[in-house]
Length: 409
Image (cartoon, rainbow, N blue to C red; front, side):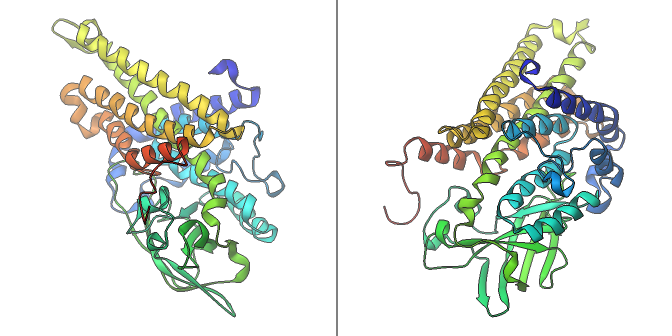
């Protein structure tokens, strides 16, 4: 991939790689018990996000006018993929913490009014612990949102009602990345229950301290545990008129968030796979079994070759999909869903090989490789399940004949 990188991309990649090798991997290995602390606030020390700030990757996508780091628009998504892969190689939870900032920043710079951009982007830049969150998924019907099932019956249960003072929102969101500790949220709600989801969903900008907003819990996940996934409750939460971002067609306008999101999901997944291959390769070249290093056993060598091939295949599809999204090509939609699906399944197999090649050590928490297996498993369910991704691929390829999957045919 290096041959295709610009000088700026190469420098950013090298800075991230050094940060991961010198800071993140040593922290994760030395403090492996931190993942399991049931006080989410203290799992990841503030120095980690401060380190991300020092190398300039916490505020990617924020307009330069507000102090952020703008990327070349011709290759922005490709750069997002490059950096998120490197960070996920150190820890996928940290990568997810950061990429939410990037993706929501891209959304806000396109749909938020300028005075809100000025206020919140400046705070994001000034406060190293400031995190953003995108609140779409609800306790019932997460897959409805991703396909989406565009019928009134599948509309969001979170409702926003207009009055003479603004909007009043009631509902609940769950499985929200950064939801537990974000400072600013983009919240989606049904504003017209008589029409389909694509015509009746609006989005709102909601600060954490808004009366009526409660951060109900941190969802204790299997993997990616350095990103604190949260559940939110809205009870007569009042939002002023100017905090309405998109009325009616919010899901359509959020395409600028969703497509890069699929690419970034795949690239984070790839980073986990690269790390799994690295640790497995090191182990089999140093651990002796049956009087010889593991790699000299043919069964082990075959698995290592399989891992390398899967990683290379994911990378090739990722590069093609990221380029298509940057170029807004006709095949961008289908490719970004394909690579999200393909990466989640192939890297899961890579992580499984890594665990099994470590034998009994692969099951030990303090050995560290099981963490990669847990992190890889999460990607099967993030940003749509694998089955929903398949249905989206079919709908992209055959829009006139594919099933509607909900409501009357």
